[in-house]
Image (tube, rainbow, N blue to C red; front, side, top):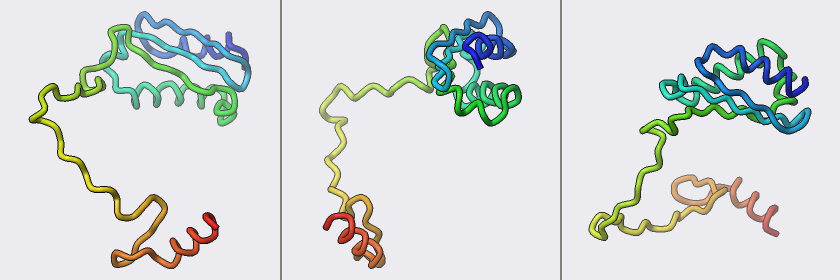
Length: 126
């Protein structure tokens, strides 16, 4: 697949005023699709539409050709997608949380590390 073929395929998406660009090289194509229609479509739906079209057109091999397709609205992120702003007053700070009593990778049974965790820890740490 060439960058022009990928661009032509993405231009078949049923979107108004879309802008499509492709950069990279075979096996590492990065594409961007911008449309005002995306302002009303959640990101997971955008990605589903894009990858359904690509899979229908190129088959499973498309995953070895295209690294990612960005889907943006020219109006910016949706309200729900914006990062929450940190509180500005000290009274709204959350109290510190206690450290995790079971470090990552340790499975417990009845509150004690399991035999699997002990074996894993001794083999990977020792």
